[in-house]
Length: 241
Image 1 (cartoon, rainbow, N blue to C red):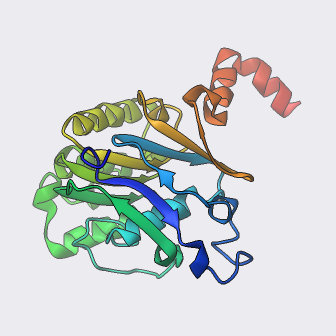
Image 2 (image 1 turned 120 degrees about the vertical axis):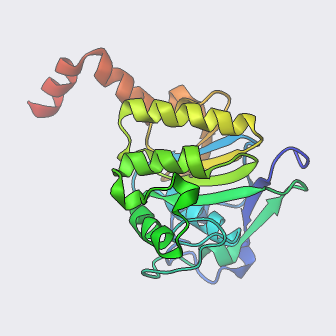
């Protein structure tokens, strides 16, 4: 493991936490983090309901690794609004001996701010020589994957499916695989059953009991989507009656 991945686990320094009754330490995912959370050398998914803490933990991991809290590479240093938690100050991140050549933190909710900073810095040539603001959200994200991400990278993505149609999610999955084949490592917080189907990935479910590693087909996302697609009329009748 040490020789094959960039980051292999993260741990909460519980002795530094003064109280587990305040945010973000009162989140079940954080409060119950009493053992190192191992990361897959290729692809790890954080899944769970809104407010379960998956994005909070991913953000803390990104900031602790030197990425800008609103997104971008480690060369980005801007802040539109300080909204990230202090959790990164309490994490211990174990890194492998291999160093990543490229890295990026993508947050769907603040991608507009990142695109604005790219324009300000005048580095659109790294993103297909066209302002991301002149493209749809989905197009600009795919440009990020195809033009900016270059392999042998550590890529932390928070809900990347937000702007992508199902077909574009499949395109993103294909590009992810290309990058994995080029020795990249991904950690992704997502609601997308398409993305989390990536073969051999580790899936961590965030719920009221904490964090649990589960199989893809054991996720609620997969079960709900399968049930709906199997018989949409029956599901709608049940929901809308």
